[in-house]
Each structure stands twice: as C-alpha cells, then as structure tokens.
Image (tube, rainbow, N blue to C red):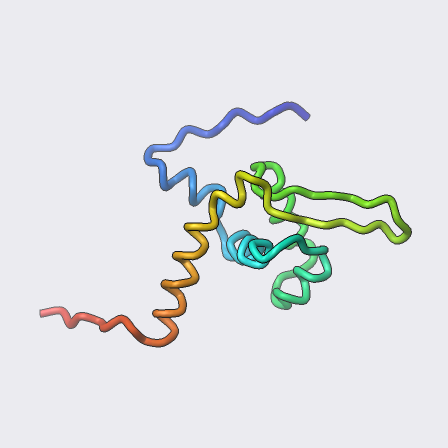
Length: 115
C-alpha cells in the first residue's frame, strides 16, 4: 500500500478538522494526553464507542502520525497507544476544547437575544 497524496485544503483549519474530525478522535486524544493506554483502557474510558469504531479511529490517527502503536511480544499480545510528538503538538488545541466545554457545561455563556 503506497502513500496517499495529501488532500488540498482551502483553509488551514480544514486540515485540522480532517485530522481531528469526528467525535471519537478528539476523545481518544484527550485520554491519550494523560499518557499511553491499552485498547481496553480506552474502551473502558469511552463505553459508548464500539470496538470496530475505536480500532478504525486509532488506525486513522496512526496513519496521520498523531498516535503511535507499540505491540509487545507477549501472550496475549499487548498493544499500547500513545501520542507521537506530532500528536502532542495538539495539546494546546485539546486544552482549549476542554476549557470551552467546561464553561459551556457550567452555563458560563449567555445567549444573546435576537432583536
């Protein structure tokens, strides 16, 4: 399987959304930001995600160079995922998403009435 050509983006944020797009990738990265995790640890942290979807999202993050996968030669096999240096460069974005979410949950934002 050869390298896929990089898509062309109209604006830079489109590239960011392409890599982080979808509900599960961002959640996976939030969990991995605290350190390496095994697949089962991620499943327990995100009970609503299916095993198939988790595997698919991890593979896409790995293909984009955001997440690294280490397989240990044990029985049963031990697989650990962790953020790469490129993935860690997203920590500021992830922090801001969490901060905004906390404020939203608390109700810190006032809806402006339309006139």
